[in-house]
Amino acid sequence: MNIIDLLDISAKTGEEISLIHDLYISIDNRMRHFAAEYGIKCPAGCGKCCEKYEPEISQSEAVFAAAWIIKNNPSLSSLFPAIPERKNCIFYNRDNPEHCMIYEARPLLCRAFAFSGLQDKHGKRRYKSCTFMEEKKELAGDFIPLMTREGTRIIFESTESDKPAPLSVAIEKAWQKLSFILLIASIENNPGLNPLNTSAS
Image (cartoon, rainbow, N blue to C red; front, side, top):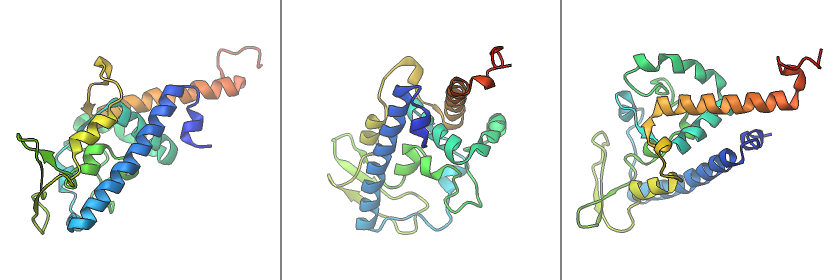
């Protein structure tokens, strides 16, 4: 049983997780192709972009990351109480090969940073290497993937409640929501777990 099956109590949430998963695969493939074609790579063991920076992410991405944590590494939820004291992303880990404890579920900005370009004021696509890359490159052309374009595919609804929030805050909120959904599903499937169910005794 996978996480989407577990969340069938909330069809919209399950669909959202599935769509984000498919988008990430598509985005990763484009970034990988672009990087391979033009010899773009991060320095071995760098992680500088994670050391003192925490991106803001959409609620959709937070739900995906929270679902990944619940399914693959529930112990990461123990990091949430330390959020106020952290100066960087709570999932940054210097000793991890990717420097990220949720690497498979990392949000768009983390996936696309240093491997995508931006549009200039004339609408032209431009790419410039990250400061820490050893081999500097500056490219221009329609072949460059755009982070902003991918970002519009990530946000499904422009609502007041889905405004981007700091990664750690957004993921903790999503984790609480999904944990509650799973608890309710568990109680419905096992009435004996319900503390209010007197008929089970």
